[in-house]
Amino acid sequence: MDEAVVQEKPTTEGTAKIVYILYLTGLAFGVTWLIGVVMAYINKDDAPEWLKSHYQFQIRTFWIGTLYIFIGIILSFVLIGILVLFFFVIWLVVRCVKGIKYLDQKEAPPNPTGWML
Image (cartoon, rainbow, N blue to C red):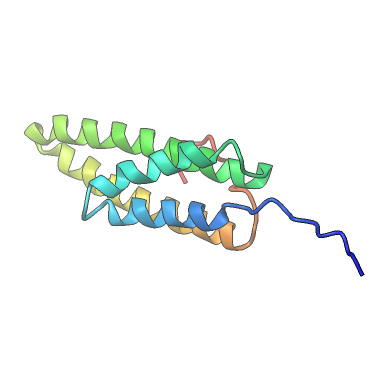
């Protein structure tokens, strides 16, 4: 008997989780931060809507985080930059952990365009 084989388009939620992990490992190995954002840009167009919001969240995390790093480095000359960089590390870890949590629940992050958490 011939049965119609329906192939579903594979989701890239595994790739989204890898991006979060690359961001976290980027704290120790900076280059993984760049690899993560490239992966997010590549996969965002082919994803279902709830997953697109994760990629949007990840892309914004990269750009906002880059701004925090830049400001932290500039202000390090007057020592307040060290606090900015410390805030960045905490901010990134919390953002990635929350993103992974929503990804595991197959839900979109509540505010993918927000600056904070």
